[in-house]
Image (tube, rainbow, N blue to C red; front, side):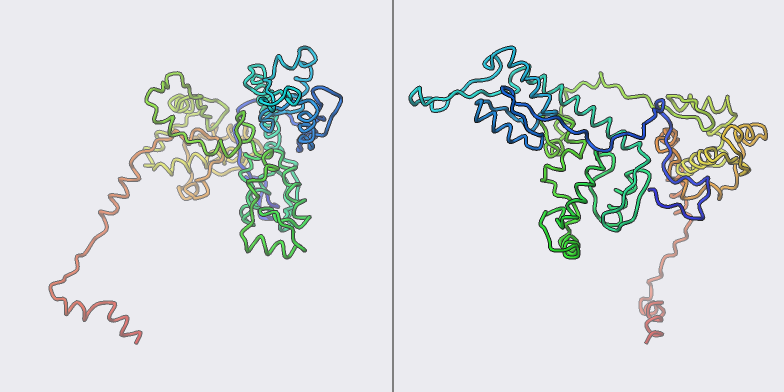
Length: 438
């Protein structure tokens, strides 16, 4: 979380998660968009009629009443303006009957009272392919926008509940509202077009509207009491206005977030005929403690650190009898010290990572560790780098369990002599306490 830095914080404090670079870092311009781009107008497939995207129903009504055309599942079509533009061009090339199913009303009545209607749907392979391509294009655009928002550090906004200002990354505000005000719109990485989402919620509050039941109240105090007493500190999940702000709604063609969430994976697990032979996991890249070298196996990275830097983690684990969680803390401690350009052996600070690595090699501090109390601290349970694969490959021995078992055997257990129960009652500690209290 990004909060104003306390005066006690130094320049070496880590206030946000670090991450190993996995791909060459791109440069995001200051003009990166935080709002969805404006959509073009929707065009009629047969005439010059057009409507704004927000009035899509008006155009669909026009198509049905004026041109006898019905589009199936139109609400599930991504980039609807492109869909209509495509079919407008195709209808200029070929008659509508080449693409649409035709059905008649009042089929049993007189011919003069019968009307022909046309249905455009994804039963037609060309229509199905178009819908899938538009869905894929829309998903790519949304994921690009989401990545821009995740990387953006120029976010600046005031909390809509307490007027505290947050800067840096959007997660600082979203996590604050969830933690301090019990109002959560979901994990930051599940949200897209976050600025526009927050604007929508803020406008509702400014209009004295409850975010859950969407009732309007006479003043802010009444609205606040209502949301608190009724536990309406959440958004209305059935309001489709919010669907475009969640990545899940862009994942599968023809499925809403409710359908995706309700799917049960057990049917796939129970299928014994599934062949997993074509499944390939992405190799895990383990990064060296001292340089940018990466290896795909623990053995390779251990060999590299031992041969290139003289650091033997196996030896330290054996000599110091390190339990699993002590290994975790030691790795995080070394990572943090080197990131802060400080020698983990003698705590001397330097101006750059290159200088501290040179010092560690020159002074022979590679295998020198400070007193165990320096690094065996709760703060080093938390990874210095959030994608540190080295932590996932440490040896998980049974030392902890064995030690705990042996420790329990060392505790003397004295059996209570119950041969004389009357004497036991008279001399019991509880009886003395009750007597003193009375």
